[in-house]
Image (cartoon, each protein chain N blue to C red):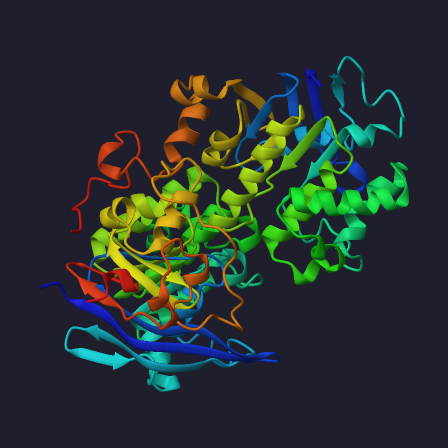
Length: 273
Length: 326
């Protein structure tokens, strides 16, 4: 599904009873997310990237401007079926799961609410989903605290895709994971994406992760969108100074100190051998 | 021959838990030389922070509720003076922490006292190092130190409280407190992990500059291999409580010898993947496999791996793998 964002602004009330000066979390953002693409939204903390994700998820009403999903304004209708089409995965894999419910029950909940299939079909679907995210059927009866962070994030992904959403908003889904687990979860997301026509919004502070999985990227800074476009174009020729600074400051494996003229820890003082 | 500042030999750290003993660090050998940055890398639970904390005995009472059992040696050498950090008494440790070994942790907010202003806290660090100094001189030195670490308007920062500073500014205060005593060894435990990349770059530059001035050794703990590539001189890799490989940074990046190191490098987003990525999960610290701890995830595992491989020493590097054992 195509997401169109036009002149979007979001302000948060501040101070006691909202009497403070409102905080402008997003100002005048324009962005088109083509159907079936993986759009990376990148920025430092406080840049508004999560706020943008929340607007797309229909959990934060814009103060100004509009968002349409395939031409329809999600905030104009109260359609309970909306949640089937737009699902989310968040950073904190533990806080996203009910600690008193088995992970199988958590995955099944959406299927129950939307009355998809017979109860037996739902059980089968849970097992199918677990296998799809690389876990065995036996995990259905486990409690969240017995799983590792990577396994829990797989459960969150299984739950998000259980309803076969058209849009998946992943807000820093791998930021809390170790390097090897991160790579495995990114591969899972890439597999899911190639087997469906799902549009994915991938919010991250990490440019190298975004480059790995996204085909479009939008760079945010202090509530504004500074640059957006095709991932290779932006990475090869960043135009905005903010994008250039982000790329310069992201440490990379393949560009050692001596070979990267724009990035250096050497301060010109006597170098220690 | 470079001067070793710290020589760790056969260091073991274990904790008792309700489910049994946890061997968090298992026979670690490591030498850190003057003026170098040694990166200690590994994934969560690999024991890298435990090893670092053991060096200044932060996992002892009264700092931690679960008392760690530490055995082995960690010889700290400063000129002709030397001490074993494992055997030092509590009063000796106080002296060592005040003068010779300093630590910067990831979470600067919990490292600072929320109800004391910055000047008071930095002053306290200075007082432990220079107990006889006059109060006014100490105040001047505090302001100079805050300026040194790149804080704007240091004269007004001293009156502020930790919550009034940004994350990067708080980390600069922590660094000021750490370098106040002119330590020979700085332990930096994920000092930039919670910061934005631009702030991270500035903090790393600051650490490099201070190190160039003082010639101190830095033990830099991180899980970010991109930072390692740009910041470290040598790298030690930990897996399941053991140091599995120690190598100069270029060798680590381009010719990893331990299969875990190779898999870890291949797992970094955007890496060229000349090696196979890591599969599966790290072992439960309560039931680490016998023999090589990595063998059930290792693409090159063989029958020999059922016994623990020794640390093989090669030119400038060491690796704990049977493929390289003599």
